[in-house]
Image (cartoon, rainbow, N blue to C red; front, side):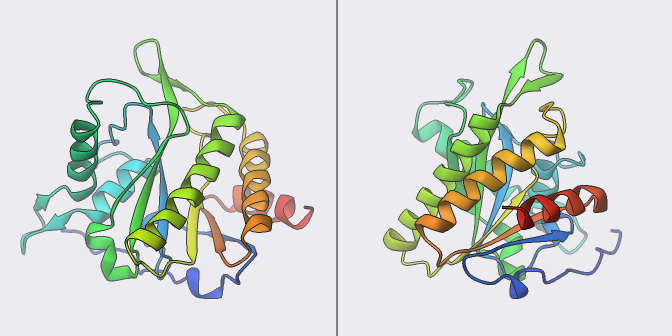
Length: 218
């Protein structure tokens, strides 16, 4: 099994009430309570060999045996339970819906929950997806609402959340458009409840610079 790259710790430097931007793959984030994954509206996660946010988190959260074989595909399994419980297998959910699962193996990195944001509606044969800025904003709102509910009803003391730059891959949104939608929605949530610290991550340095500039200008 290839050695995993070192885990970074961007969460510790994220102050409450602020949006912090880091250049980092989301699956390497440490000490942040909630990681948000972008999903299609069928809540079917990307394959573990894909380089998508969904695929990377699914791969990182899976439990493995001593040889590195996956023995529990935690995130996909728990999403499947949610879909069956809510009678949604094979049926799309409303765009912007957010569903929570445990963090599986990512608990070892200090991650408590994974929020699965259904933002991408398949188009045609599923090779492309449709994502709108309004759906990104709704997913941000729904994720914060779900986080507050879980903090109260599951007695989880959570105060930090990490979002990737969603909607820019096969979702088709330009990076500036997605950044404006996400930052605008995050700003509204932080004005409503400044006790949260927000981390935005992207593995692309150019995208990170754009996010930092847009965040500073707000």
